[in-house]
Amino acid sequence: MSAEYSVPQKRKLVTALPGPKSVELQERRLRSVSRGAGTLVNIYMDHGAGAILVDVDGNQIIDLGCGIGVTTIGHANQEVAAAAAAQAAKLTHTLFTVTPYENYVAVAEKLAEITPGDFEKRSVLVNTGAEAVENAVKIARKFTGRRAIVALDHAFHGRTNLTMAMTYRPWPERAGMGPFPGEIYSVPTSYPYRDGLTGEEAAEKTIDYINTHIGASEIAAFFIEPIQGDGGIVIPAPGYFKRLSEFCTENGIVFVSDEIQAGIARTGAWYAIEHHGVVPDLVTTAKGIAGGFPLAAVTGRADIMDSVQPGGIGGTFGGNPVSTAAALAVFDLIEQGDLLGEAQRVEKALWARIGDWPERFSVVGDVRGKGAMFGVELVHPGTTTPYPEALTAIIKHATTNGVIVLDAGSWDSVLRIMPSVVISEELIDDAATVIEQTLAALSGL
Ligand SMILES: *Cc1c(COP(=O)(O)O)cnc(C)c1O
Image 1 (cartoon, rainbow, N blue to C red):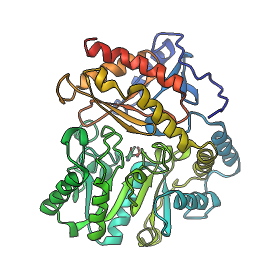
Image 2 (tube, protein in one colour):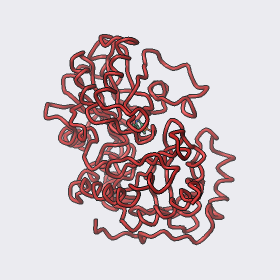
Image 3 (spheres, protein in one colour):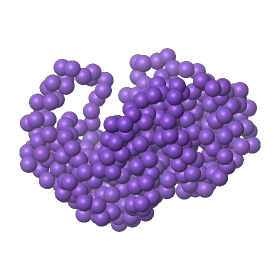
């Protein structure tokens, strides 16, 4: 994208990281903010543009995380900011379920257009991803009259009590904070690097597990992530989702694609399930939808969505006028700036730059990804044993050198790379060079 940015798209360090002002803020924070709201990197940010964040000490930092896949269109996009500011000066709240407004309807219309499937659709707008997942659970249960909810191994669906139960890892997400709701089941997934199965073989394993542990006729909804984000950028083998969605159709199960991380242009398609040629019954959207403003949605088949009684879903801030104004600006930007094409450009650039890491570095077991959503799985050399200490070392070196990267994976051993789709090839190259310094050291090079 040939946009002009208010911050040069270059990494530039003017202090050690974290700098003195960050250290000072960190001291205040430890006295005021719950330890539970832990932070990956204690560098306090002040502003940003495109793929660069500028911290309180004036360091320009390459952001390969986007606040976990939120600022897909780039930081502080001026068109989104202007749309939100104009809306904030006009009307900030009515509560859609008391007195409605157009933005909410316009976002629902757009979601009907961009989500997979050409059947009639409806949406409900909420605030967060977890809230969208919770609502999808309620809607699917109401529609089917069934109770059981199925999620995949390595899944992440949120941090509320219900969605924690649907999330795979006990630590740190769940430990000590139960009890969790019942009738939630984790089932085996397809993880090509680790199981070596074809999509069909993995699907048979999943289905057999369901038939022997739960019973298909008990299941209201089957939740998948088209690409598991927090689970370690796990992309199931071709054909896996196709078979699962057929199984759901055959058995009256609502098939839900949780697109909260992978959706909205990140993988080079509006929704990542499109890469698998599957049309889900419901999709959940959040993170990237509004350029950083809180907004989430459940969208899907009109008969399922309309099975809920009026008042059965909703909430005070859901589909807030300012967030929906921002989302409408994001939709325009994605279309006008060809951001699906930009995500495909980033994918090509990442494959070209880091695709050979498994051959070059013995601690890299696998590189995988789609669009601007990549994972690098770290292993002990010559094995497939997860190597979480390698990830810790990479994150430490990268962040002290001005590159923000994310962790992921059930064994904390997948480096997650999720830049804005507007990131330049130069920044990808510079960031990759920094990461390679640690990979080389860990690989004994
Ligand atoms: C982040 C995420 C959620 C939870 O979204 P929040 O907005 O943090 O509640 C749910 N599902 C997936 C796939 C996510 O990546």
